[in-house]
Length: 259
Image (tube, rainbow, N blue to C red; front, side, top):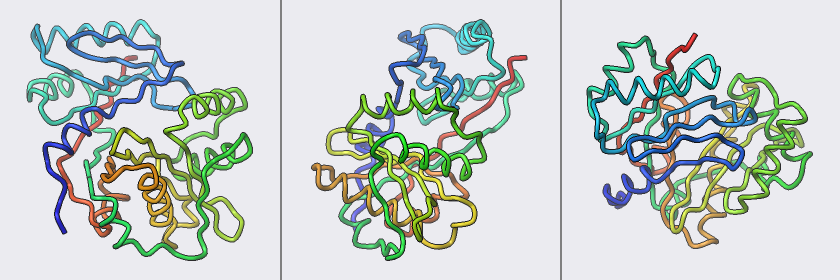
């Protein structure tokens, strides 16, 4: 098995930024700060840090001032490869704590499909319409311990999904009951796999593997040959490594209170 070229993986990972049309964004040559809509439950995040023209401290102070003006409780800073070490130290000095750590993993789609052995009793289908989306987001809320979307948030999520046919959501069922949700985004010959979550009571039955296999098949049919995932270190990352994915570093989300 040949691992994907590191330069290709790092370039694809750096390009992975999603800003929906109903988000609020401040973009400068030094950074991108995004206030995500409520249906995403991501809050405010610094999603990109470029070459800095000023000191790290001045840039951090400016970002904090903007986010504070948005009247939010906290700000998440994503620390990625290539960021200056001073950046993470400055954010931690200001009271941020580790919120989440993910591994950047990649694999040739053909290799992963050969290694996967999804169960026969899990059915994975592309989300189509409001009822499917409600089922998917409800099971996602159970999987990640968040609140279910209300009707307005669900309508906004459906609009965003409709605007991006290259980024469908998927729903997994077992015995007719919703048990998992996941998403995929086609970016040229790379598929970005995101949002994979399994209801607590359904874990250990191969639901995640089934959703992984279906999304990989979907992407291969559309010309992709490389799969990219940012998987949680303690949950999805071990499954992905067994499916032939190789780790290419970690990214850390640091959460800073603003009140």
